[in-house]
Image 1 (tube, rainbow, N blue to C red):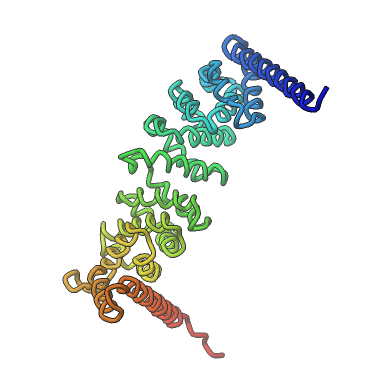
Image 2 (image 1 turned 180 degrees about the horizontal axis):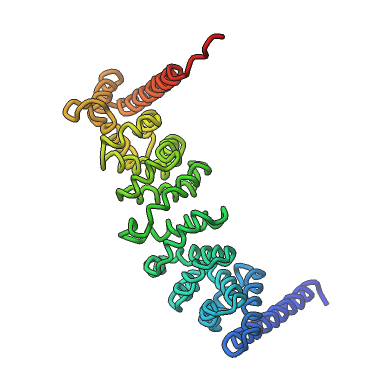
Length: 378
C-alpha cells in the first residue's frame, strides 16, 4: 500500500468518526429536547444543565446553538423560568444565557417565546446571584435590535437601575451596558431612566478610565438624564458630579467627551444663572477650549456654545467661537497665504488653548493659595 493510499484510508476513517460523532450529538440533542418537553422536574433540570455544558464545550463552528434551538429546547427552557423551584429557574436561565451568546436568532426566539416577564420577576428577587444572572441575560438579549423595544416596555429598566446601586462590579457593568443598549433604540429614552441612576453612574464614571468603552456608555446615559430637571439636579448635587463630567471632557475618548460636554451644556442651557458658576469652579474652561480644536464636529460645536454661555460678558458683546476662528483664519491667511491658512489657523488656536490652560492653572493656584489659612505664630 503506497503513501497516498494510507492518507486516503486515514481521511475516510476521520470522516466516519466525524459522522459518528455528529450522529451521537444529534441523538443527545433529541433526548435533551424530549426530557425538557416530557420529563419530570428533575429530568428537566438535568437537561438544562446538560445543554449549558454542551454549549460551553462546543466550538464556535459546531453550530450547536442553532441545532439545539431547531430541536425546540428554547420554549420549554423559557417556561422553566417561571417555575416555583429555584434550581429549575437557575438551570434554565444559565442554559438560555449560553444559547443566546453569539446567536442573534436565538436571542430573538427567547424574547418572542415570552422570556421577559419571568426575567423581570427574577430581577426582583432577593437572591443576588439570580438577580445578576438575570441582568446578564437582559444584557445579552438587548443586543438584538428587534428585542430592544420589547425589553424597554417590559419594566426591566428600574430593576437594572437597582443593580447599578447595589450589585457587584460585574452586575453594575452589565446593567450599564444593558441600559445603554435599550437607550439607543428608545425615542423616549429619558423615560427609560430614573434620575436616581445619576448617583451610581457618577460613582462608576469616577472609578473608570475616562477613555474606556464603559465610560462612553455611562456618559451617554448621563447625557440622557441631563435632559430632565430631576436629572440635572441630581448631577449638580451628586458628590463630584460636575467635576467628573469636566474630567471626562479633559481625559475622555472622542465619544465620552462628546457626551460629557453635552450633559454640561444641557445644565447651562436650562438655567445659566444656576449652573454657570458650578461648572466654572470645577475648571472646565481648559478642557472645553481644547475640545473646540480636537473633539468631534458635534463636540466642538457643543464646546463653543458652552464657552459662550460661561463667559461673563452679555450675549450681545460676546466674541463667539466662530467669529474668533474667522479672525484667526484671516490672520493666518495674511501671514502664510491661502494654501497654508487652515493649518496655521489650527496651530494658532492650539497655542491659544495651551496659553489659556496655563493661565487658568495659575489662577486656580492663586485662588488656592489665597484661601489657605495662615498658621498663627506661637
